[in-house]
Amino acid sequence: MKIGQLLRTKRKEKKLTIQEVATQLNVSYGAVAEWERDMIEPRADAREKLCNFYGLSEKELLGFTGGKVLDISTLPRTTVFTLDYDSDEITIKGLKGKYQVKIIPL
Image 1 (tube, one colour):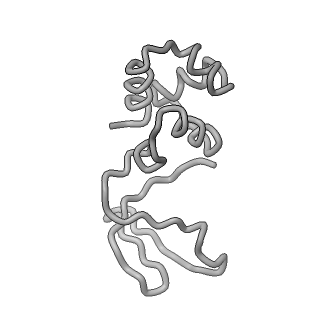
Image 2 (image 1 turned 90 degrees about the vertical axis):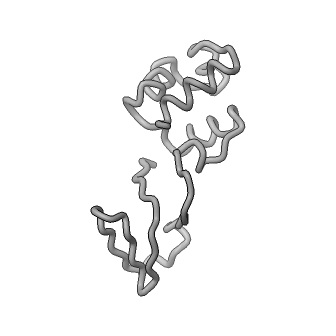
């Protein structure tokens, strides 16, 4: 399920309008509408608000369905890694594994 579809479903479960969600999260009506239409993805600060508001983990919000999750922000800044976009295989200094890959704007 895409982020927008999930957000729309959660909003309707709570019987809220887009404006009510926008007011609760202190964001614009347009932002919520664009998220729900998958026109843009919420930034990190908005994702945190959405997760808290709807009772979701960030993994659930982003649609990760299983497998390994690697937070590259915890790696030393000098770590070199390559990403093979065809197979979603990530190699990090000899550590190999299959990861679900999603590029998330900050």
